[in-house]
Image: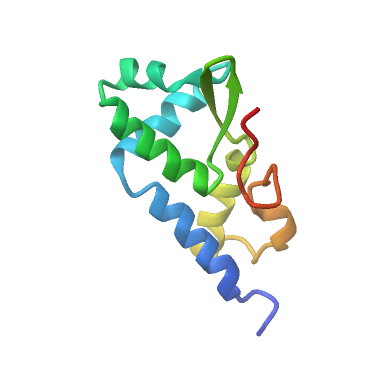
Length: 123
């Protein structure tokens, strides 16, 4: 493999990222969360976007699985926020796929995990 060839693992990660954004509701959720100064409960997303609570919960799960969204427990609520690592990782991924940037060092390109299993801790 040449230096600027995208490796299979990175391509699979990018595909999961892009797939997670293939639903307009998930794009709206990420956009809404990116404009919040503090993490918000799912109910705020439901109220703002007018999407049902089960639908929002499903989309948050998908976004959390690819680490676009972080979550943490506060009392009885789970609060959600955009993973700020995505602000650079996602645009860079698009540029790499389109050949505008060299392939990344995998350790610096991936949104960071907060636990070894890939899920942020809810405490």
